[in-house]
Length: 368
Ligand SMILES: [Zn+2]
Ligand SMILES: [Zn+2]
Image 1 (tube, helix red, strand yellow):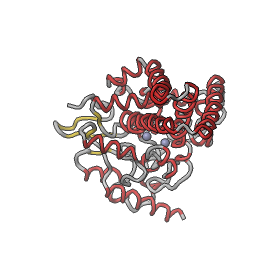
Image 2: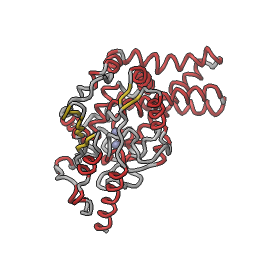
Image 3: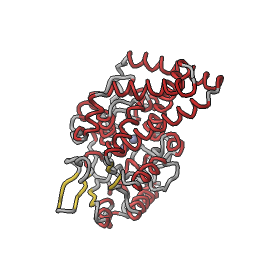
Image 4: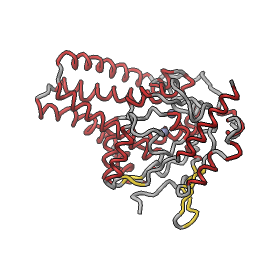
């Protein structure tokens, strides 16, 4: 029995031991709709790129696109001044923290800060993203608690809000309904989206997604209920005070390095996925969408830079066809699976990937 129920809007039983996975809620109108049989790979192949369409240009393969999704309304730029002031102060302190790091060279705190930031990173990549947003694998209770704490350490809002926003991002990618729509520019996609009021479409179309599955997980419910207390303890007090008691780090130095600089650095690592990996890189799996493959982002964001692959196959737990290449989140999940803490890891078959790439290459040849 799985530790928590699967999203009823994603999974439907077609027989006693046979599930059909419908990826509609997280797909984008510019993508080929995928109806995957998780047990029979042959059906996956047929559903992703039908045999008779493999050699057609991509325009004929992709479904009809609702043009209302494409319209970008740049008139909505209401500034949220409290957030602007918060981020200015945060970055000013962060810059002083970098200066302190270089001048004083507190090596134990460097290591501790890296460790704490890495835990927080896995909370985002293996937890909020690949587990809760995409359901690309399942995790037993100890792993879910570990990832929930990590996601709290990262301080990027609670699991429900994070996962809901990310599902909206996938469903309405690069439209006004995308919270960090990269068509509004690099800065907006990176962090500007937190400095402006949400576009009305984000709220309106976001409500059309069913995220009720998230709150069925008691771990998510607990975190949402006590989020700010958990954030205070795991995101601030523990990383601040442990170095003070264990190796006599100064209070001010520990606050600068292990709270502020660690936090700001991890924020930018996440934000680069929304900005850089939506603008710079190649698009071998779907050249009609903005997300691209970017090694720099993969390095900084625990393997989340294979973004063209990820937006094409959002249910793949590895978010890449490559092995362990800069993808330490895949290593983390594989290790968890080895110890029985993660299971039902979903992957895309090699044949589907090759067909997909061949279809894109063919389409590009036709276009050029
Ligand atoms: Zn995603
Ligand atoms: Zn994206």
